[in-house]
Length: 78
Image 1 (cartoon, rainbow, N blue to C red):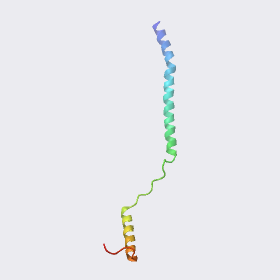
Image 2 (cartoon, rainbow, N blue to C red):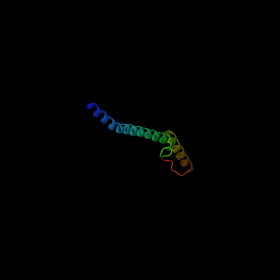
Image 3 (cartoon, one colour):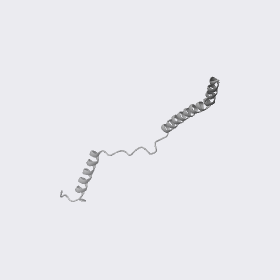
Image 4 (tube, rainbow, N blue to C red):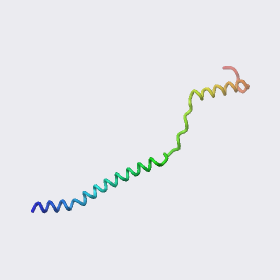
């Protein structure tokens, strides 16, 4: 008689086990789809602005300063 009760208890808990497995599979599929769609969509920000090359910027500043001094806009003492 104990075998019959154990069998009935197993049959009663089987739908819950199936439900947990289905829920886990649904979560896994949802995460995979979310990651796939996130990969296809562009990032929240546009591409970042290019960084300045310090050496080039310094050369431009020095050239502008020389041109300003040559034109008389800046004094020559330095």
